Image 1 (spheres, rainbow, N blue to C red):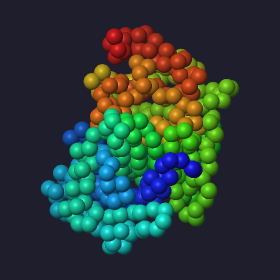
Image 2: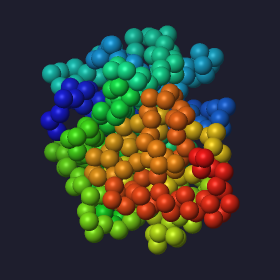
Image 3: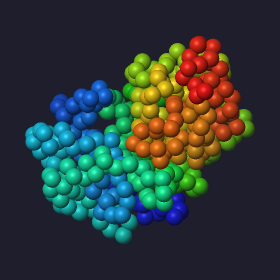
Image 4: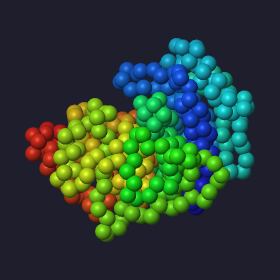
Length: 367
């Protein structure tokens, strides 16, 4: 893909591939270093190692850019044995060198020490997306940690924002086949039988592409703009029973109102959901949180939404407002999500709002 972000794409693709290889090595370990965080979500050795690798590589290549990531290094600093495991994992997949792969096309870089590793992770945890012309890289090292520890669907998300707008997206899906086509239904337990996985990438205005993540290099396939097709019908992706933040009966009722099978594709992680929307396995999702004061996290959506937008999709919140990625680490200016083909988005949004009013949940709407 030719775009103004060719160098950024090359670095991100190389680093994400190495990170995905590293994350896959953890799946066979009986002890994945799982820790429950204060918000009841999980973090593993893989989350820390992947975020450190992403941060080291991007900072090495683009030292003036801001970094934003999900994890902090607090647990690593407090638990030396955990820090040792993360460091050993990085060294094993970096052959013990600070710069492990460098050529005219890519640079994959390791932290220089355990202290540097913690500092890089904390740089990400302190980062905030900018709204000026500055560039911000946003990382979700492992989206879907709960399913990751079960050996199921997860994603690694890397996004570049410029002036608070999505410029570049790279998403690795180590257990999803790159060969899936429209009409397939995937779930958390859907595993690529070839073991090659998929990587999706997009630059604003240049389309969305997919190719196998592992194995011999293959040319990337541009995904057709399926969400722009005039005869397209609606197909849902959602998450049922595994997340407690959303209102399941609203999501099911919206689908019923629109005559759409529910849940369709059923996935825990938001990044895999955006990916299946891009691939055409679904083209609609509605997500209403239980409370107006609950806000999504930027690393679950930045960049990954661009994959769908570049095939003709439109994404807003439940109030119909554009998603403001410059609001901070949480999307505090938005409530929930409505995504659909651009020409059908208004109908899906109306169905969501009408359903909330009928179910006496109008207090969840703005105004």
